[in-house]
Every structure is written in C-alpha cells, then in structure tokens.
Image (cartoon, rainbow, N blue to C red; front, side):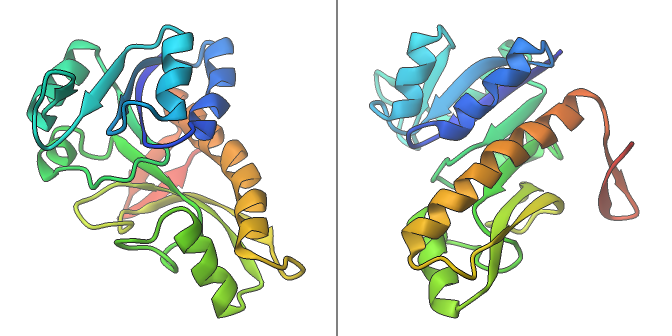
Length: 203
C-alpha cells in the first residue's frame, strides 16, 4: 500500500481520479493539502473523511507553515506527494525531504508550454495560439525549477480539429484522469526506476 498526499488548489478532478486505486487497495490517500480553504478538492476530502492540511507561507490559525506541513506528512507516513493542480511552488526544503518522491501532472507536453505562470487555461491558450496539432498531459518528477523535473510518462491528444482553448482543456483533462492513476499505480507497484538519468517504467 502506497501512502500518498495529494496537493490541490481547485476542484479536485484528478484527486477523484485516484479513488479507483484506493478501491483496488493500491494506495491510501492519507492527506489532502491545499492553499485554498474553500476549493472543491477540500470539500471532496472532507466528504470522504480524508485529512486536510491547509498550507501557507504565513502561518495562521487554520493554515500550517510549510515546515509544519513536513512534520505532518512524516507523521502520516507519506510515501509519495502528488501535485494535482496545486498552484504554488513547492519549497526547496520539501523537495529535499521528498527527493524523487514528488510528482506533478501538467496539462501539456513538456518541455513545451511549462514554467512559471503556465497553469490551467493559460497553458491551453498558449497551445492553441501556437497552432500545435498535438497536446496532452505529462507526469514528471518535481525539482526546484518549475516544470523542469524528469518526465515519467506522457499522454498524447490530437487537437487538430479543436476550435478553442476550452475544447483543448476538456480533452486534455480526460487524458490526465487516465495518466495520473497509471503513474501512481506504477509507483505503488515499485515499477518506477531512475536509471542513467532517465526515468523508466518497468514491466
């Protein structure tokens, strides 16, 4: 059983996509972490009795500091951190504590259309305006630079006939909901291997 923490800032559709792995007893979602108290993902976590940790650079009554959060993650025996629409940069200290154990899903084919400010509909507008014919989703390891970590897996989507960034977003999201559980399950099965500076998914 792989204990995961899912970091979210929005409605939580990728969080929900991981629930099937819980049913299969591949993973246990031991924590949902958010920078937003009232987002849909937090509501989903509360409804499903998943512990919620609100986090901010500035500690308050409801929000943990990132240093306090690390302590909570360790107490909850988190094996893997999954960034699923989390809009804040992860502090270097957390990346050091969870080296090669933080993954992110990005709504484009990295290394294109990544970096600071490239999230949500911003990504799909950039893809649309570039007249790209293929987009998709990328799951990658997280390092100390935005969208820079080693790519684990990608899913490709034909967008040649789509007529707006919103249509691209809708189609790519379907790919995300398949790709993220696939990669997390491979982590649970110990099939993710880093070899000679490349990430390999073992058979």
